[in-house]
Length: 254
Length: 93
Image (cartoon, rainbow over all chains, first blue to last red; front, side, top):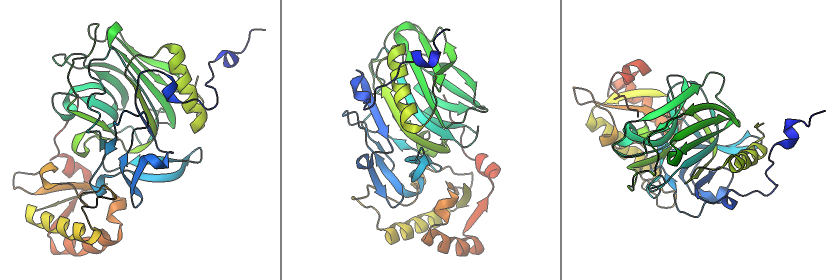
C-alpha cells in the first residue's frame, strides 16, 4: 500500500519560527500583544517582528482595525472594516529583489473588492509592485518588476475561498513567474510574469495592509498573521511556513 | 459601513469636538485624530466632503450622541453606498 501523502508532507517542527528561513522581510502576528499599540479596542500600530522595523500604522481612530480576541483557533485577529494600515518604514520591502513571497492567514467577509497587502510605486494603489487583493470576485496576484512595466497578474475565483485560509503568493521576478496558493494548493500561475530580473532599485511609494491608500479598497475581514520574505522561497520552505501557519491557526493545508 | 456628507466647515467642527473629547493627538496610543483628514476625503462639485465610517464607530458613545442632532439639523446628510461610490474615485493596479 502506498504511503499516504499526508505522511510525506513537510511538517514544520514545533517551535518553528519564520526567522529561521532567510530573507524574512516583515512579520506581523496578531497574537503577539507586545507588537500591538492599542487605542481602546482598536490598534494604531502593528509592529514588525522580523527585526527590520517595517511597522504598520493607522493614526486615525475611525480607520484603525479592531483587535478581536478568540476569533480563530482561540486567538486574536485584527479586523479591517473601515481602513487599513501603512508602513512608512517598510517602503524598501520590494526594492531590488529577485522575488517576494507573501503569506497571510485571513478571512474575508465577502467577494467585494478589497486589498490584503501590497507595495506600490507610481501613485498609491495604482501601481502594484506586488500585491494581493480581491477584484471582480477573484483573488488577484500581480505587480510590476520594473517601474516602467505595466501591471501583470493572474487570478482565481474568490467564491468559496474567503477563508479562514492560509494564502501564499510567490512573485519570482528572477525567473519571470508568479504563483498563488490557497491552503497550500496551487491555484494560479502567471508565466511569464514580466521579464526576468530584479525589481527596480527604488522604494515603493506605499506599502499597506488591510486596504489601499486613503482607506480605499478596504479588505473587510480579518487578518491574523502576515509574513513577507524578500526572495522566492523554495517549495520546501514555502510548505514549512504554510505548515507553521496552518498548525498555529487550526487550518488544514495541503 | 455608513456614509455621510457635510460642508467642510461642519466636518472640521465635528473633528475638533471629537478630537477634544478623546484627547487626540495622543502620543501614548499613537493616534492623531478621530476622523480622517478632510484633505484625504472625496468631495463633490459643491465642495462637500464625503465620509465612510464603520457602523461600529458610529455606535461609540460620543458619535452616537452627536449623530442624531447633526442628521436632524441637516448639517450632516446620510446616504447609501451607491451614492457614496458615485463620488469616490476608482483606484486599482
